[in-house]
Image (cartoon, rainbow, N blue to C red):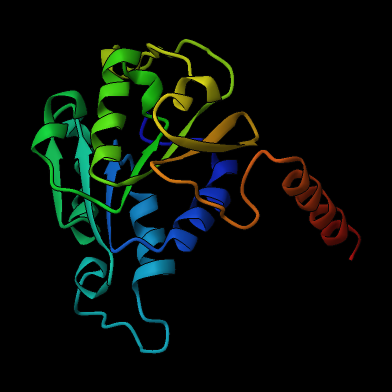
Length: 210
């Protein structure tokens, strides 16, 4: 579907804002919410009044492209967010795409066969991209709109990413968010380490009691 787990939005946006990419590829962009939020929190200079006569895309320091296989999801507002939308399946397109500092694959990878998805991840890691992957923490089948693109074809755990490079992850609601890169990344507040989990729990308790 064009949407994804709402509970993972704060974690993904925080990751993007800490990585602060100058270029990003949004694979399976859906409604385009992550492009909008990336422009808002990473791209638009908040010390200056935004120009209402120009698109967010044209005012942002972040260049964002997208890959979209479903032509029904090419709504008019998408042009305000993305420099270019490549229409087609990522399996067929990835070798022709330019390099990006960050590749975003939110609730996309489970729609790909594992061998093809690993080839895609390996390709972008070879271009020194950082990759954020969000996927359900448990496998379930999805059949929507009589569309083969909506079916789940694979299930992913941390072990599936270990052979590709550095990986850390965080469980958020019904999903897991993975950060994959060639080199180790220590993103404050993100990860599966015991200390980081304890700190997140402590912050949540303090916030609830304050």
